[in-house]
Image (cartoon, helix red, strand yellow):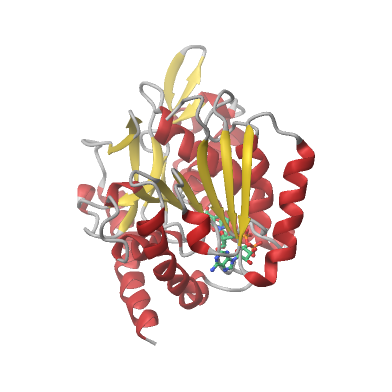
Length: 334
Ligand SMILES: NC(=O)C1=CN([C@@H]2O[C@H](COP(=O)(O)OP(=O)(O)OC[C@H]3O[C@@H](n4cnc5c(N)ncnc54)[C@H](O)[C@@H]3O)[C@@H](O)[C@H]2O)C=CC1
Ligand SMILES: O=C([O-])CC(=O)C(=O)O
């Protein structure tokens, strides 16, 4: 995708919290690289039109050298026209005390409506990442209602959870976060997700040491660590009264950059992708797996040994996705 031609990047919900953190990162080259010009397509809804125009004005005022144009609109078809990357943040966020299921009804109908606009107007190889919750199920609805769109191009964000896991291990071991790799987020971007460190390693003086060996505290790794990562979104909402906008925006950039430009040799990342049943995950849901990326394509990492306790956790989060899919279809009927 790297070329001197600008890449068209759409952000929906661009006037919101994550949008406000994300668009300057895109315009600075954090999403696609410091040499890749971009044109930003920002979509929001009519009640947010004035705020959206405010963001547009600030983008102009920032004089970002890579930013070659801005489309700011409340018209979904106009927003989707020719986009090569679509970052779907638009929706109703979870507020303090709400479970993700509470936001389901409103958000799945938005994703059904936007699926056809994407299918009709976006570039035929557009890469899509869904951020808005319930992220996996919104992505699934997008896929189901855009049947001509390549299913492999529709993903959801679990990179924030992945990065949270790396961050927790770094804090606990005192390592730099850049020396920690190969954690895995399995399943749903919800509190049922399984943050798995059984294959994660820390670079200590040039040697890769397994996280379990370094931490020497399985009770913490299987207990508090897992809970902290699962509940981090809720903890941020409690502290900020808003969702984790900065870290979500940064993780979106990691997700797309690795997808487009590839993952480093020997490193995998977590992405919500259409399940093919690997590791016993239910098929036909968007499930978070460890993936490597090359030439713009993701591949699920195969052959990892999963112990019985972990398999149970993979199954629980998979079952939640099956239940969410059913609920989403019920919501769409109402
Ligand atoms: N997957 C992840 O890791 C994370 C997901 N989230 C989710 O991301 C979403 C956005 O969060 P925030 O930016 O904090 O919320 P926000 O409420 O600040 O922004 C959402 C924006 O979406 C707009 N919107 C609503 N319906 C729309 C539609 N039909 N088309 C286009 N735009 C529409 C709203 O007007 C608003 O400007 C929420 O669903 C939140 O739960 C938040 C953090 C992490
Ligand atoms: O929990 C939420 O609603 C926001 C979110 O997805 C996260 O921060 O991971």
